[in-house]
Amino acid sequence: MKLALIGKNISHSKSQQMYEEILNRPVDYTLLDFESEEDIPPLNKIFKENQFTGISVTAPYKNFVFKNVKADRFATSLEAVNCVKYFKDELLGINTDFLATLNILERNINDYDDIVILGSGAMFRTCALALTHLKKEFIQYSRKLNGKLEDLDLTKYRNSLVINSCSRDFLFSGTISEDSLFWDLNYSHQHNQSYLSDKCQYVDGIELLKLQAIYALEFWGIS
Image (cartoon, rainbow, N blue to C red; front, side):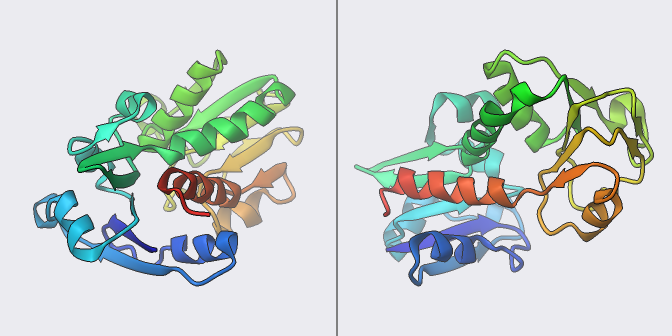
């Protein structure tokens, strides 16, 4: 079994560690770090030459890979793929970001009166699709719509689920009601965790990362 990750500047990736923790054994894992889309060889060539069982994809290449595989309906809705396998001479792709997000939201959203999403990028679209699939309304705040988000006052939303889909460079320094939960899709984010720890309930994205890995292994038929 050999796995790989396609991305840009991915030396910090925790994916190998996550797979090894889930499987409880070492994993042959290769980081395929590309500077641009033009540098990425055809995916079927990558699979054949390296005999990979599965390939994960991270930013900024999820949309590029989507165009080169047969994707399931959710990945097609997002036009983004982050998990690929080569099966019977066909490249197949899914989006485990969506599957993991849907799993977590489905188990938790009924506990909250309001759902607020910060951001407008790929993970916002993932959360929005999951909530739409679950027939749940949400409020969005983005820099394009609302300007600077760092100092937002979210205290008017009581018993709310606030989802931070912004990138790691977003440092939240606003206000939030103490009965709310701030779900940061990033993990090991020291500023956000430290700032919010005594203001509301704070949860980072480590469960999301683990579920993504579980869905990927399932897709690749690895146990």
